[in-house]
Length: 210
Image (tube, rainbow, N blue to C red; front, side, top):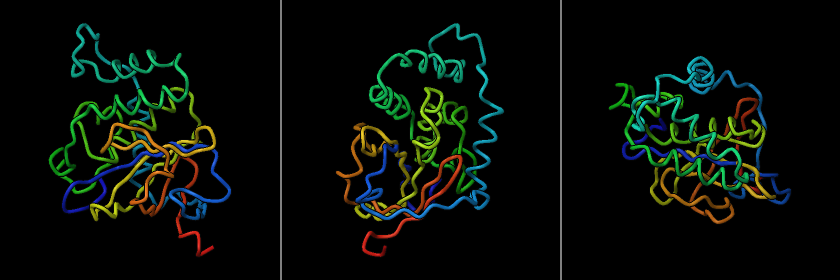
């Protein structure tokens, strides 16, 4: 969970080839490799690998009977679609879950959930984004194409998070606050703080500070 006193948001950005003239939301990116400073993120990756096994007999359609198995069923159902259609479907699938704060779910101010935990318990913004990232990875998107982005929403004046994916020379934003998947170029009220994937992380500075 991104700490804040009101609603906590996570933005998932699906990144496309980055434009040379501007980075995410018009900010300059500085690459770093020491992922050890993000224990919550590393814990999610490790736990997801251990939990990523279908369960239950799926005798009914209720998602609360065999969550991982139903997740895989959904992924198989969209595997033959175009990459753009997969992005849209994954965004819709995750956004159907109920928004619940970490303190209500786990008794903790900040907890990053795996897809299995999110599908069982629902979750907050970073949980939507993580499930979207792991879903796209299962569909064949590479780690390099995606970034989990932590940012500031200047309209609501709260921390937020998104997932960014590279697609057709653009970066698409998957957000649990809205159903549409749109280009980062059309969003002016998000200020990126840092982003991370399974190999690297990035800091952000205004373009004029190059």
